[in-house]
Image (cartoon, rainbow, N blue to C red; front, side):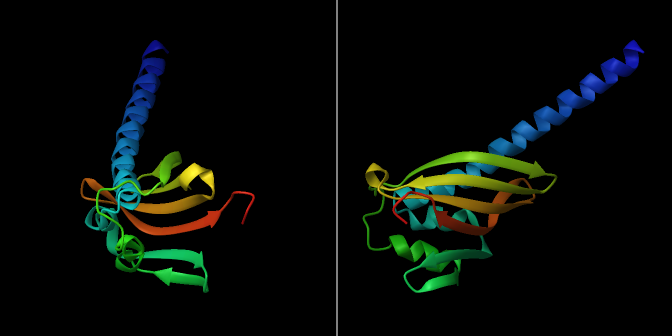
Length: 142
């Protein structure tokens, strides 16, 4: 009985360690997105996504699908490396083998606007990439 319990504890520990390491790798992909969009680093921002990722966003012209290139172009007229006021933090990550979901809060200067972004991620070799993103505004002024 002691051997069975020890085996179960060991397996559980390995699973927790695996999940933690995968979560940190996912955080790396999300950090590329967060830093790229907060500091107008277009190449870094685009590197968080697969080339064929889909971004579903609601803007002035309604609901639209964007490519990573089209999305990064939102930041092209701002100085590269200069903080644009977007503050991001990871709220949640869930990993299921080689896919994951993540929730990130993005707030504008002085929290005048706040969005929650939802991501789908996929593991490719040893790197996680965003394959899809959508967002909704959650502050009271929307």
